[in-house]
Image (cartoon, rainbow, N blue to C red; front, side, top):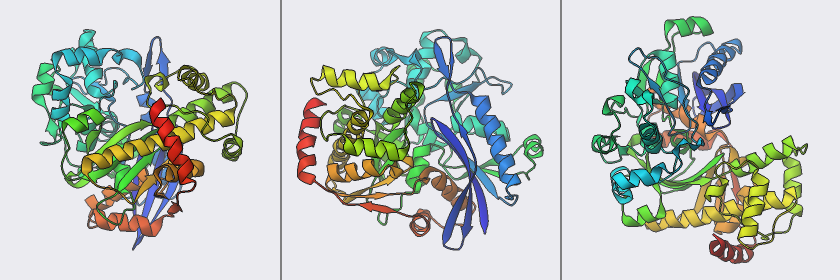
Length: 488
């Protein structure tokens, strides 16, 4: 049995997961889970990066205490775009900004005055979102921040956490590709783009491929957590890239939805699509394993529901998942829809009221009860998935037989069924812990315990349950989709 350890950090929580590879079966065991909550300081929102480092150390300690002293390696994956800056002494210059912080508002337009939007897309192939690294750095530059002048190295969040553990400053391709500062052709930083924006080029080092051995735990860390000096692997450090590794597809042509706080819907291709049509569709060409490209589109996902839960809890209303399912099933179908990607849902103070406001502004029936709001969210997400899948299919000139849904959202049975209904195609849901599993698979490939990606995906199919959803009530959903597109 070969053991490895994955740290999978999402926008709201993190976990340590031990993988146990035994012949043709992989089992996983959670050894530590922890919240990942942003910290509001005056007008800004930050990640509590040192708390995350502390929780990773706790994960190592808990892994040892639970008897897993024989793990061979570890890797870290997180969300994209956010970063920390190190000075010449290797010290962190301030807490990283949270991507939902407001310091990038209106910066995109300023950047487009310097470099046309079409040129940025042609150079990077990345979807335009206001919090991309390019705009965060431009915001620092615009405000004459002292940070850029003092900084020697930029590390994205998983790279920064890995640096704290190993002392090695190393950039990894899949996470670097999320910045909108890299070329998908050269798989390196676009230095001309950086110079045009007056961003110091010395901050960046050439990214390594996922699966690169990236040092071992520092002796002080090993001593603190009571484990041997583990090999640390630069896995596919963007969480979506790790999740795609674990998609249990049987062919090279497949569509996936990594479903969680964000929904990432796309396919795996061999070279980027940088056409005017791709620019208009605002898709992204992010780096994947084995020099593949993840052609996908970001969709605001279960963040909408998570925020409603948070508000309702603060107001004294708390529902179990079973409660939510019953409330939703009892609510009338297709009464009102939202565009999940409308800017007004980016970071509202009160998500339920914001959903009601959107419906009122678009002259629809306004959902009143929790069940009506949840149904509005889930139906809208399912219909948005169809819209995005058809965009992707149009670009690659293929039609996929169904959709693989992986990640935490694959547990939401209503959303999976609604998605099958909206698509009129089969949905295969699972594995739930795809990101952590993909993290582990890259480690096993890097250390020679698995031969290639095909064997890794076969292992997923052999090891984890996959639930199948067939479309129902297709005619009703077809009519709803027509209405949804008109409203959106």
